[in-house]
Image (cartoon, rainbow, N blue to C red; front, side, top):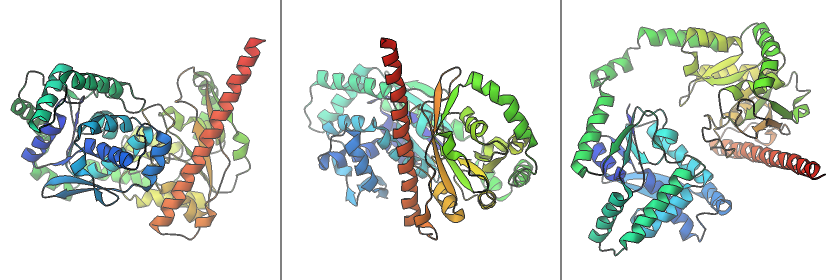
Length: 471
């Protein structure tokens, strides 16, 4: 499967090139910019300020976006209304830029885009495809051009459509948009480290298309179609060994002495390097013998172990992506600590069975409900996966919400706040997708409450410190 990520500033010609490349190579082109424009159009149509997240966020909860391909062209339907004919008006550029800066909008669109790309060979273009939307894309290109060149292209394009626009206004708009896109808090515009830079200032459209096609073909080179078919039908020895090793890791370790040793040995080191104050830890006490799912926001690899050292004294269990277990040494180490592999993006029956067995035995499990790591450094969480709710309902386990105040960093004071444990008892016995969605929404609401409590706690500390400083 090939995922092509083409990033760059406004007016760099990304969409034109992406469409041509997809057409020439037989890939699907997903117009991500149009998705943001459709969201902005829906907000404007409803009289909602596209910069007001408090009003936009409720709109997203009721918004159903459907991406269809009709006569080979992408059409974006929002709540069964085709927004496509209205998305290229001049005023929509600014509206799309404004609304795309809102974290809730970014995460909503990103989730839709990732689901689409996971199932198809696709070309995506935007500002943050290679850095945020599809960080594992196997072909990344960063297209750019001078602001003057991009303004000239846009000016000619609008003139051909019979629209009259002042060039200076257009240039100023592009420069302002560059600033907004590169300075926004969530997923700012920047070149991915593994992306190829392509400056198109002095290149024709045909030259740019040829350059990108050449690059994509190079990315596709390692496997021919014959190789792909062979791999799909005949697993390699390496794959067979990996699967056999994973089977062993789905069984919890019989002894937890290694984890207890490391906890005693490393906890003082952790306290010195990552000074984290546990707030509300007493709420998680007295849960021995009762299955409990600890959920937390996820910034980095170290915050995987810090809550364990703080809360789990005898043994720890945490879901971790199966890729981490590919190395026999690393996989064995993680297994000895109680980690459970899970194959992301597919139904991992072995992992599910292991989790259900642990929770029914009264063990504690730590899960990151977003299903992925937040690389943006904000506490605005992405859309929750339904796994937490499904496990809690199936095993009638408690859910213990936790939240970091900031990404754990060396020698920086931080807080890990533990919320009030809760149950999803009103959903016990339910199996429908609608019930799972509602249960997942309740989990999200509880995490939002923890975030509010954490903000209040830190604010009170700062006020106290300010008062003491004035004395």
